[in-house]
Length: 347
Figure 1: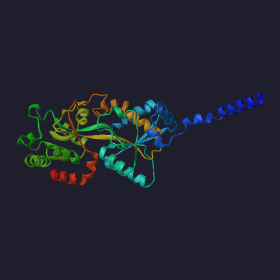
Figure 2 (figure 1 turned 60 degrees about the vertical axis):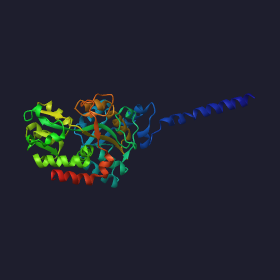
Figure 3 (figure 1 turned 180 degrees about the vertical axis):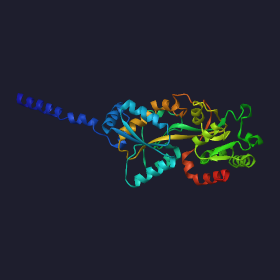
Figure 4 (figure 1 turned 90 degrees about the vertical axis):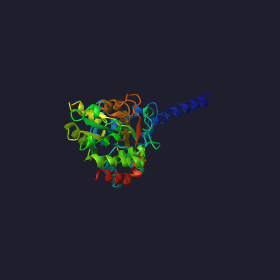
């Protein structure tokens, strides 16, 4: 009987010893999809451990100010970030062409919502289930979760304070029909989604007619690039611009430029978004950066006058009601909207 008990005890001990690898398997490497969607209590710990082993991160971005966020990420985690900055369309084109060539370099893509929506449709993006998604304003997270809104690009007017008196500022777009605005107005060359969303909100036919009447009566300087247009306002060449981003005037004002922003209702906005590449070579670093941008990164962006999507932070523009550009509609109607905008601007 003793021998039987000893054998049973030995078998039990043997089983315990060989159950240790099974316990260790809980920490086994996860697939890219599992890393991106993992929601365990040790998510951050796992991501940091994995990211440090990967040692680097590659980001494509449209915002030049993303450099400040990337630098803060490197400072906190010691992960080297390599980046490539370009216009929104060029980023989408590069992402698509690299995928066709099965050349997978990029981990994270920061871009406008329509371009990242297009990337999602091409199956180039990976859903990420960040713990911070719950902290974001409505609309920041599409149902497919292929990208997430990190800031709101709020379309704002901007005026030169030496060229335009406060008492003559327009309260509505209809006020721009006044002859005093002749030769004083400017607009960005590629803001077709802003124009379409704005005119639809005003009443599609009535809104379009109003803007055509404004151009016919007072003309419109058309410039490519929101930063350039804002600089021309600051210099006085364009006294009043209608479509810059709300953060543009604030950034120049801090440098002493005679410029102020002006919100004319209805106020249109578009999400600037972040996404993880479907075949990210450094998935742990990518998911860790994703979480960082949606938490500490929100304050960094807010400090540069961006409108963060986190509900935990106050908005630089206050509680102004926003009309959001639908990225899916912007894609589906792009050709139509571009033609209509070209008819307005002559470009």
